[in-house]
Image 1: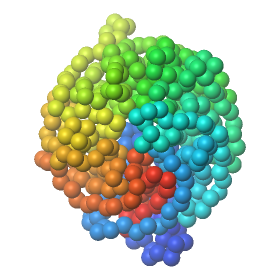
Image 2: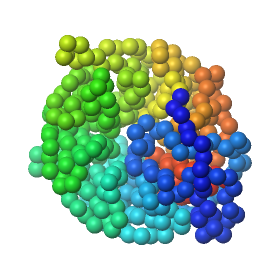
Image 3: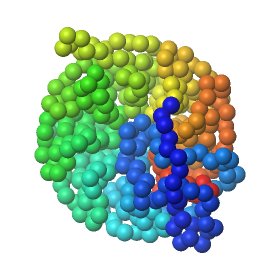
Image 4: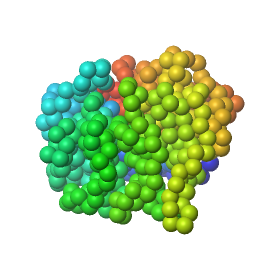
Length: 422
């Protein structure tokens, strides 16, 4: 299990400004919490700064709620600010709010006339991608596949890249949903449509293309930046295969064919653990894959495969050596499996919902169900043990939550809410 530091100071300003009682305890100061994008700093869902309380509160206090528009993008947090990318009418909007109060600091609007294709209407017109923050810049991916860089302090547009001249439709059928990743001086994303596309790396300062790899169509999954056998690489699940690409050159290193077909979409983001990649697809079970490098040649070894649970849209998280996820079988059920051999250790009841967004904390997993319920469960292999649950929204909650030190940010259908965990 990853080591979690002891708590330090607290978000006293939030409670004070809203007339609530002073938050008790000692925890990390607001301006020290940074949540830069989808699944956090390492894109693994691990919340390093959170110390679980000895006793979870029976209910949560709503500190503030702000209408921000529709979409599934994760909130971002840095320097006492919250950033949210969403849609209002035909526009995509990037907002900057005060973390303590929810008061607006700036707002930028960009016309994105996207219309969801048949079958995707209930999910709205996006954006589905989560923005990412790095070195004072916020990078967004519109539902049409445009990549924009914004100054985090002022909201000024710094640059924009649009690949529609190269790919007439620069998004898969239901809109661009992959969340770009920043690794050092480059932003990496997969652009294109179902039939053709490319994994690209752009200079974060200028938006100039550093490299473009392959011609595979885009999927809804998001890339990872990891190190395997001493080689920094981008792991990307596209429309056709899971691939490993050299971060510096863009050269393809290895691949595992795992194509998207019929309605079985390539959606969850792979999980990286102990040099292995755990990959699950709709109606296709879960694989554990190990890229290997011998005599300068890469290959992929299948460590295990199981078909009893499968990942549809939810991305799983690791806690110790256990994988916690949400299978779409039996109309949705939580599960835990052993990452060493793929054995499913327990499954929760069916009919849980359509989607769950996970975070992993010390000895617990936080699960946000799409029905607006937040569950805290024990990170144990002995069965589903719920320690707390809260109703945090009255409308669907598909956007990933952000757990602060003593509070949690929840994005529902159109609003963003800060709930106190004290």
